[in-house]
Image (cartoon, rainbow, N blue to C red; front, side, top):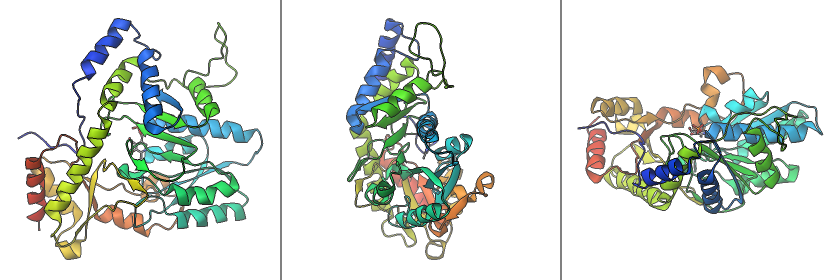
Length: 375
Ligand SMILES: Cc1ncc(COP(=O)(O)O)c(C=O)c1O
């Protein structure tokens, strides 16, 4: 039996013909018609008229933050502060720290596992009391679940604080409520659709995307020779890889439905197991269930998430603990944290189960049988 991976790529069958189209066009470059097609498609899906394709989601975050820093620097010399979710991947805040921002972290809330607006309001109040310059709030849409943008924007809008949403894990989510200033998506190999690597910066703000586009190509000025008035990066996505992303995006609704069905399949099989609960679905969204995540109460279940993870691993099945909160990361221990108990507990009890959209009912039966007999 072959290994069951956590979230492997799922090809649609259209990738090769679009790659062929790119080869025939000879646009083997970080520009070309396939990139335009990808950006237009993402504009449709995200309802953001302005989209930029780059080589990673991390690069998209970096570009958005750099734009905000450049804008603020014209009016404010205080060091920029970013307030972010602690329950996330380190890529959410790596670019902010690398750009010299202070970063404060907030706990997750129990109902959605995303940024807790109560902790965010404490952080904003504290920042104002200390006369800090808040560059943006950076919540994560965790495991395909949208954060509570109505509450978050309700706290940010009165002060003009932009919200930059890390939606790397949440392409395809249907959210209610207001749109963020900008959103970042990832096409990394484990995401719901993949181009093996890639990212999108999406926004209603044409200036942000125009500046990010320029920065992503070494900030070359629009003249015939190479002229540079600011320093940029080489972050553009390849036109060849855009073909893979375009092919995959055609199946996005089916992929979301497949992941939701897998989540429902786990729920059905494990519903009567004492001590196992599931990541809740917040009322303000239809989550993608990018990953199916369970929570194991060791006192009620009889063993802990690590024992289940090892039992699955012994059968060549990959599962993974919920993100270790960023405030617990050795390299980030110095960052200021608001709350923390919820994400600490989710880390110690949460387990991400195999969730690839091609997972079949027999795989689900086998995984659930192993979980049930681990005790
Ligand atoms: C929450 C989160 N933010 C950012 C990223 C970074 O995306 P990328 O790997 O495309 O750089 C990822 C995933 O990889 C992620 O899960």
